[in-house]
Length: 295
Image (cartoon, rainbow, N blue to C red; front, top):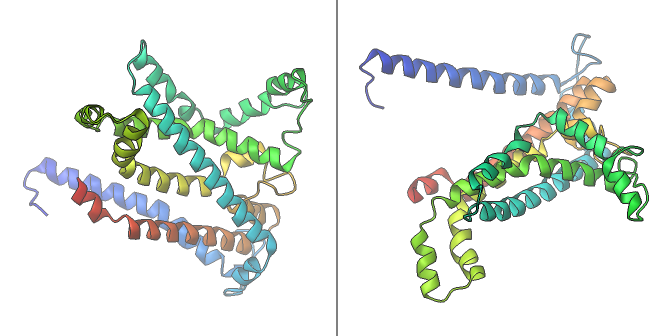
């Protein structure tokens, strides 16, 4: 590390160390506390605790409900990630084309991502209301009837997927749009000289150049969507019949509604372990050294 000679450099280093320290505390303290709680049996955070060791983990892992919630979380994350990536690349390619008002449209694209999650949830609940919902009325007018959006398990999962994709696709779009600005235009010009069509240029130039960003997006969206709590809880609370209950909701329900703090902490710890393994696998196949070498 280079010597920090000036006072401003020392203050900058101190601020950086302080920020890193605060971030680590905010992350590590809750994780360690959850692991600690998972080793005890208690009905609340202030009640007496009895040491049970790994019994909470054994009980949780033996329950079919845990594996069902795990499968729902994986399915929800996989479906939303695929849709966000596909739509994000499509919208980024469209926004990269020259057209009138492009700067304004690009700015408006990010608006859904900036909305608070509770606003998105309330908006979708209003659109899908069984009596006055706009989409419900339209469905009835075209002869489908009034869909039971939140009563049918498949439709409920479709609603949370649709809300999630609508909210977070703009982030993916802007990320891919930024990556497209780094692709040399000379590559497309050379491909046109070689009589390569749009589809060939897309597969042999655009996709390879977007691969680093694609890997980062898939990693980030996998972490966020597998651990996403707010949008699902606000829309369905894990229902109907636990059709949208994944591990974060299961941990919350178990700790705060079933008064099993140790079991809820065990579920949360197992969810954290799954995410940690995912990150380790990612860095194994796509290490930072490779990124630096490409840079």
